[in-house]
Image (cartoon, rainbow, N blue to C red):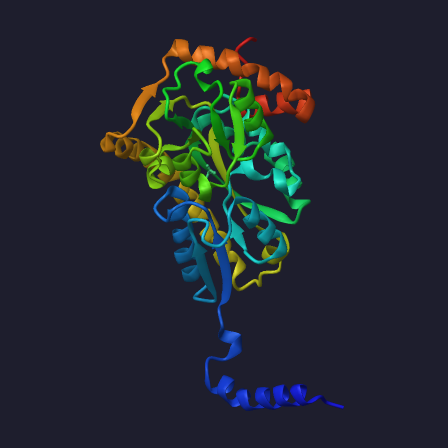
Length: 340
Ligand code: LMR
């Protein structure tokens, strides 16, 4: 027998039918793709996400509607990965230094200090056949990498000048999450703290962290110059994103939208590649223009001291990744260890 509530619901639904029929037919509703990220809309990733939205909607003739959520407004670093796996969000572009919580440790290898210090080596690595091995690890977790977006080399910031490795001693350094970044901080005598990007400004302001490393465009768009006095151009590591989706979702897309989305991915990737390096140069000018940060570019001698101090991390990480695996990464990225 139908309960009272159920009968009322059924009547309500029946009454709603004509309204639906004269409104927009359900079939014509666009497919909503949610794209969440943690940076500002005017950072390179923020701009590429907005371009993706524009192109995806255009190339699918409005069959897809992309909602972009910047600034960790939907999810923070760790939550967004969980949400993607659950299918609550469809696109992310996290730093590959944050993939540990997915149960994929291999990407941490890219944080080995001074491994890929220039764009050429980073792009060589990301374009190498070895990336298939990394992609497979993500796919095993239901995550599909659609592209890699390289956002350039890291610099360090703090409230003290970071000139020589000893200057890190005792500092609480914010790290993104990778185990290699943890080892780097410890090797420098610092105390690593994993802090979500959305909480970084406040952590630096309140002294939860004393320093961090990032790309200039993030330092400038997050206004970290208001809470950090010193910046060292060290180029000791890189910030690479992977544009990722939920495999089931992407593979289930119908043939009338998938080619348009693939094209939007390819063109947004090209845009990112053309934009990030330029934006990071402009960001350094913005930072200098504020007059709020003391900027130091490592001299060759200082850099050699940093390399000497940090190369043992490569050795220590052999037990985590395997010596052969690290050797393959060296080969794929064109890295030559200084001692050889
Ligand atoms: C960070 O957490 O420092 C960066 O990965 C943020 C980002 O996505 O650029």
